[in-house]
Amino acid sequence: MQKGAIVTVILIALVPCLVHSFEMQTIPSGTLTPFWVVPKSTVGKNKTKVSPYKVGSFKMMKYAVTKKDYLVFLNENPDWKKENIAGIYADSSYLRSFDNKPTKSPITEVSWFAARAFCENYGMRLPLLKEWEYAAAASETKKDANKEETFLRRILDWYGETKGKDMK
Image: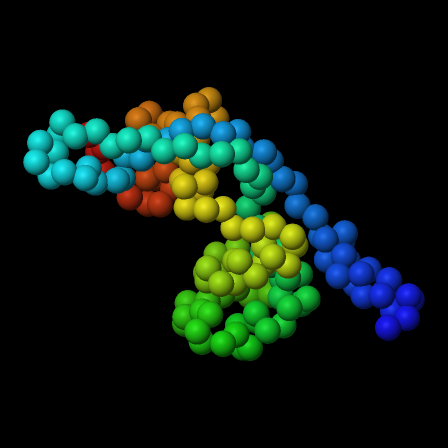
C-alpha cells in the first residue's frame, strides 16, 4: 500500500469522529447504595444492609442521542437500518416509531447491540451497569438522590407510574 492510500484510509476512519462529535462529561468517582438490590439474606430482611459499591470516574455523553444523531449513524452504517438489521441484533420493536425525520428528541427503540455499535462508531462505549445506575441516581444537587421523594416522584412520573396515584 502506498503512503497516500494509508493517509486516505486513516482520514476516512477519522471522518465520523471529526464530523460528528458529542459533548462528553466526566462523571466523578463515588459510591452508590442501590435501593433495588435484594439483601443477600432473607432472614431479618429489614435489618440486612446492602453494601454500597464503588464507581470509578468515567466519561458519558452530556446529552441523550437524538433521532438526528441516529439517522446520521444509520446513513453511515446501513447494516443497522431496520430493513437490513439481522434478527439476532434486534427484535420487532427496533426503530418501530422511527420515521427518518431527524429531530432533537431522544432516540428510543434501539437494541443494546445497536447502541453499542453507535458508540463504537464514534469512539465511545456504553456505560457499565454500575456506571449507568450511578449516573442515573444523581439529581441536580446530590450524587445519590435515591432517597429524595421529589427526585423519585419525578422519575416515576416520567415513566408514567404515578399518574393519578398518591405516592406514599
